[in-house]
Image (tube, rainbow, N blue to C red; front, side):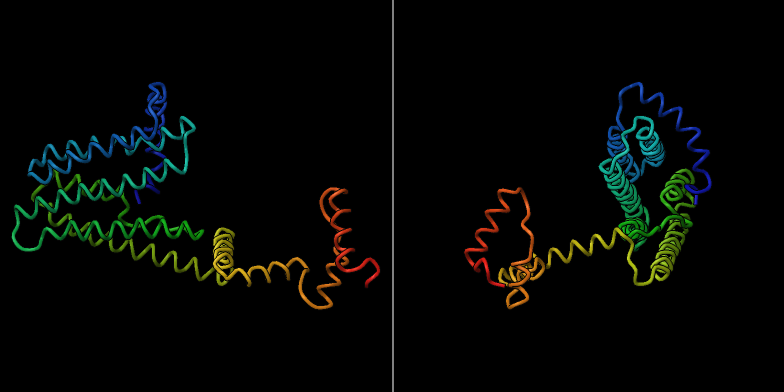
Length: 270
């Protein structure tokens, strides 16, 4: 929700900062790794009950995650590797922070309330998986009430106002579940609209699967399929295809190939 409505305003702020970072020679991977490293002490501070320190470290850790994308665009280093690293780092950061919440609640609350952050983590991973799987199929699964930006805001609010920490976590779980359902329905509708015609990307994957199936077939079946596909089948039709098939390659190679065929089948045989 925030990403769709406030992205242009955020870009106006982060673009000049990314231009300044470009002069330092820092790469987007450096920022991603820095945010990942700062998430570790933030999770420790939250889990040990140092809520104010955890909030400060969490905000500091979120800044590199906010700037690595604009820096990649400013330096022209947008790559698949960087996108993969950033996505994995986001999942690790979520796991660390929510794990810190679970540790804190296990010390301060009785019962099974510590499982609440674990449930939030499970739903957030599902949301990310839905988007990744949809994009791998040529579909789109963006948007929702509780994306990662909203989760970070709610987590910061839960740390800043500790007396409403548990209600905010319950709210995050509910809205995250709603987001997962929204993305599922969106992808389901897109898949139904496409019908039985897969997008080109999926068709390429199917061709790879068929090729893998062909390579796993017995050698005799693969040899027979190759001969039939190239007009070298058995019987009169296969013999006619062999006799009438033009020689390929250079002229000398073609003459040698034609001479071998004549010696094998006879120059005057039809």
